[in-house]
Image (tube, rainbow over the protein chains, first blue to last red):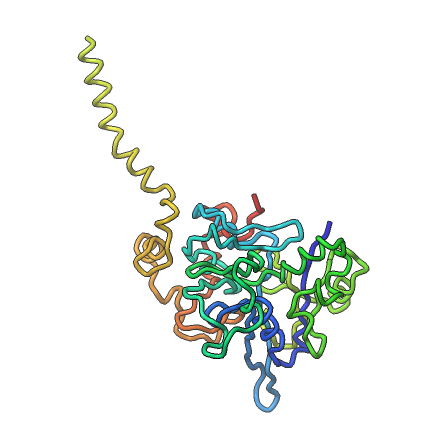
Length: 230
Length: 98
């Protein structure tokens, strides 16, 4: 089996937000519905204070609460594919917002209106691609829920090219956010392959999933800075 | 005799109507009625039927609401765990995918 996971090392992250910018350009996210967010808070007491930078995208949970809620309302717009990627079908989403309400990470956003990323400054990144030519995950609609897809368009390309072994290694087959980190705080790969870098590093760093009490099996692991909230 | 049986059946049906109606209203609302709007079904269930106060979910202070995008009127989903876990209906958390 192949199960893709992400590792984010909060001890390395310096809060530059390059991963957010890369995601914005790659996935044409609009300001009201970011697919990747940066949370910043301080821990400790003066003079021993430090900032925690925590980037947060979809956790692509094993038992996604968003999918359970979506199925329950009858829309059945959320699915989980063979690689463990949780996706929203914009054509089925009816904008009820239940996925937004139940996600313990506050990840999905209801995109009320399609706005350009940089209003008045022309098209940017994927915005330049004609709507019909875009990957289905980029054919966004107003009043539908959106979230990170693990750059599934790249994973699909790897499958089409027969290069799934290059996922997490090659630029063409690796999520945009994981490519651009200047301090190598992010890593993406197959956790079911014990020889993969991500599997080794998760084991070596004792990386943890966030909010485990919800029992939904997030597939993003964090190396937590001392004092960081889990 | 036939008339008596017909009346009996009709009477029983009428007597059962409230029970049938109650069962139907407790059942899931049609998909299009699901809404997070303040007057929508989500808030009706929680604020009216479950008699939860607004501040039970919508915390005034955001400091302790970690791992969620800081926005006004944000909800800490920790409170959802009280009801929506496996074994309850509807369950969102700790549920094996179907």
